[in-house]
Amino acid sequence: MTALERLGSHIAASECPSDAARELVELHLIDTVGALIASARTVEGLGLLQFRAAMRARGQGAWALDLATRCALARLSEIDDIHLPSMITPGAIVIPGALTLAGALPALAADDVIAAILAGTEAMTRLGRAVDGPAILYRGVWPTYLAAPFGMAAVAARLLDLDEEVSAHALALALTLAAPTVGHHNAATTARWFAVGNAARNGLNAALAAQQGFTSDRKLLEGRVLPDVLGITPAVAALTDGLGERTALTEVSFKPWCAARQTMAATQALKDVIAGGVAPAAIDEIAVSVLPPHLKMIDHGVVTGDRASHLTSVQYAMATAALAPEMAFDVQQAPPDLPPPVRALMAKIKVEADEHLLAGYPERWPARLRVAAGPTRHARDVTHVPGDPALPFDRARVREKFLRFTQPVLGAETAERILARCGSVLATGEFSQLMDEIERACSTASPSPSGEQAAGSGS
Figure (spheres, rainbow, N blue to C red):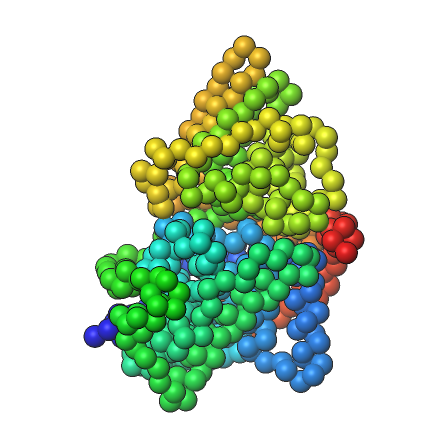
């Protein structure tokens, strides 16, 4: 059997394996719905919702458009979950897709939805490992964008009850519909998030096409397509090694605040030093050692109106954590200006690569911090941040995060109501009611204050 045939067989036979898996799926479901809702208030999120409304007005409604929009909203949040070893953010693709299909296919049982979420997570992260997501990202390939059709095809194949042969064809077709990059266009009108939503829709279409009898090359991964066309030689065994022996979702990290995950270990280290009694105003100099692959991505300042520059600047993330921690919980992340103390602290932060940190990479993304404050010196190494599998979020932490990001959009009462519905949907099976409530919440969203300002500064 080819790798795609083996994975297709696994997906077709997949089930909800345990109560622990059900609990973990529920926590990631809550987290992802929170990300989706929080994004509805951003400039980019409103653009996605307006596009969908325009397409509906032209008669282009139905599953696929909703699925694409919801996946795009969840991913643009930058508070969605992430699988470090593969550099894949699976929840934003797999969970909105599964919920959309479950809302449209009312005969589905909750266990089928759980199995589909687990299967989609498995497919995306295994493909990410196979193509070495942590390496190709820094060549300009976006691993989640590349894997999104594949993950969604796995979700849809399980929910449409495709057999193992048809599931393999769905996966193969999804790979042929995958694209590697969206470039580096970071305006408020960027099509980046539209593109990743459309990639998820391609995965749904692959499964629907396979259901109708279309076939594809199930030897695609063993052939020369990826090496010759994309310059990627896949580790094919990574797609199937230990299949069924472990659950990939147990390796997926929650994000504790809004930022690129590459910035978080250094930020957490500074938070720890400050919690130990060092006043930010007393800091004279900060030296940060980071993973060599991450250096170029995160060692830079910020550009007014450029959301991506704020999300990926380790200097910005650390300075705001020290002096304006509430800014880390603004999903828009494009303030019109920075407080002078934040800018001053950013200027004191020097970043360097340290080869010694690579020992556990990519499973672990550590950072090392050294702080000079007057005559005293402080050092802190951080390997795991809150939300990583080694420091997992429990239900209380997931609830706290959900409310912190959704209450500004929904108000306290509505946020609590949707949280309760998310927490019960895998027991009640009321997926269409949950999606209806999420839709109502998104339809009443308006730009956040920083979002309005960012839009103005980008024009």
